[in-house]
Image (cartoon, rainbow over all chains, first blue to last red; front, side):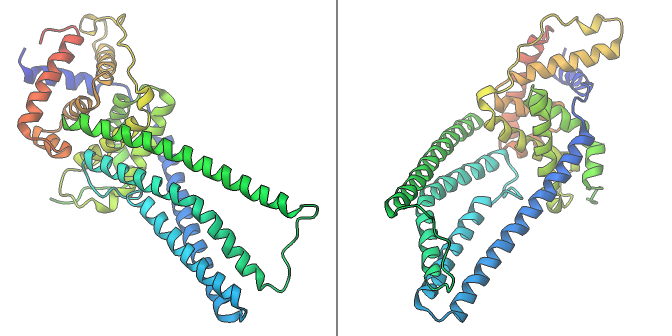
Length: 192
Length: 166
């Protein structure tokens, strides 16, 4: 049998396979997911706009020094968070390249960005806390106190949160690095 | 080239079966097949705006399906579907009902294809879906000659595994 006949026979068998996937259910699930993606994106935009609006309001209408500093720091943190978020989501909606290797390289780039963000994450938490403290200093109504908590207990709680956050970031980084190694392996396999 | 009807519904009705076959070639587990099928349809929906009719709709769909299948294989690399070929399946060419036999042969072929290394699996599924060497080469970023050599090697392996003479 010639190779052409072989492929014709194999293709006939291949295309006679029963369709084991419920395509209608898949379509419904995909519609749900596409709406969820739109909603999440809208939520992202609303949060960013609200953050910028709040910071601008503080800067323009509050005369006290520290809340204004807080507003500026908040804006910088927000801008950095939006930028990192954007870089991480690059290619999520549409792959930049049509080839398999292109997609893998995109995945790799996103993993690398995720590692960078996870390494920067522990810095964002104290920055967020600092912004909140600065803004809170000019607030006329005092923030609700934590009754019965001594300053050392509060510090211990803060440290515990930071340590837990740091550990979670480390685990995340390890997972992403394993993924990068797997992608590299696949890229090598495809290039062979 | 005129732009064919490229709504998601039209794509599912025209190429749903091909998508399902690719899903089956990359994933043996039924629950994870649904997951991969969703990923593929979602990616197609996301990319529809980019479709300008420069290639056939089938090539466009298969390209996306393969990209997502590779991504899926990457995420599930620890337990990639490498199930054993069921050896107790009857020889369909000599079975009482030829169409059922052909279906069985298809399932057996799918099981063999799932055992191929990833790069070869891509090549073979695209060829079995009827793409030309040129289309496969452009999709995978390899030369037409390379496609022919690799497909020839894969064909020998598959026909041997299917219990036929190459």
